[in-house]
Image (cartoon, rainbow, N blue to C red):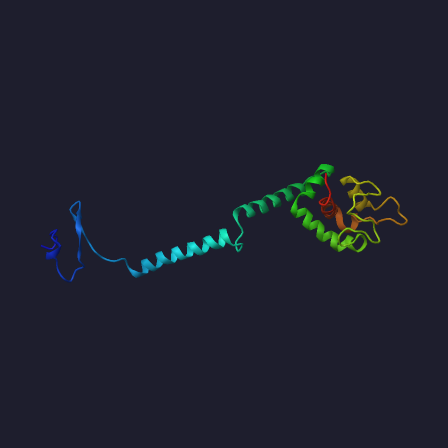
Length: 181
């Protein structure tokens, strides 16, 4: 009478039976295997640590930060592929973090020695005050950086050969990033 619903008459070598019967089936009253319990507890601990590191600390980059970074990279690539530069394109570049950071590096390497690390001036004119000697529109600034100042005797040299149009647009974007359109 092994399959009899009466739990008191089962073999002592088998685990005890549960007192309920469902669809004519009576289950053994076994505990879960330890490997399964430790996997379950480990998953709970991992989820708590992951939650804390993702949402409450700044150890991991959030999805929104990743999205903003990727959208900025895409916008930077789109602006870099623009065939003809104009004032609107240079203003858009000045609002893009990728262009501005690249432009800052170009500025620090090539321009800071004359115009100052903070654009305060020195040998060259100050670039942080809004007073422009040869025009302050983005394309005028680009032209001055690329071709030099109109005053060839004591003015700024032409940078187009050393930097190229891409790096010149980056440095102009960096300078414009401190101005209002």
